Amino acid sequence: MSHVGIELLGWGATAVFVGSYFFPRPSLLRGVQMFGALLWVTYGVLINASPVIVANALVFSAAAWTTFRKVSTPKIL
Image (cartoon, rainbow, N blue to C red):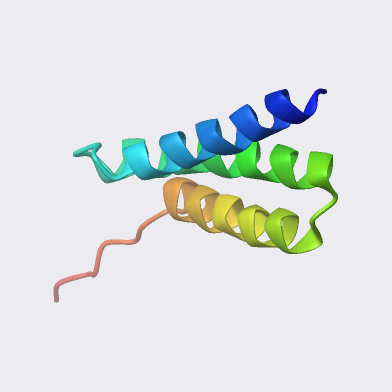
């Protein structure tokens, strides 16, 4: 991938991640954040930046976990 393409990927990842905060439903926000994090991981791989890769792998994992976990409802006695 060219230098310009890599830079555009980074800017696209930024736009997706920032844009995710404008989604009203938390589940949609997390889904878009996961997509943005995957874009950032790809960007990190292309520029060989371990901190970018690890940070966004953690963001992806946290968003996925909170999206797919089973929320237990408290039992009222």
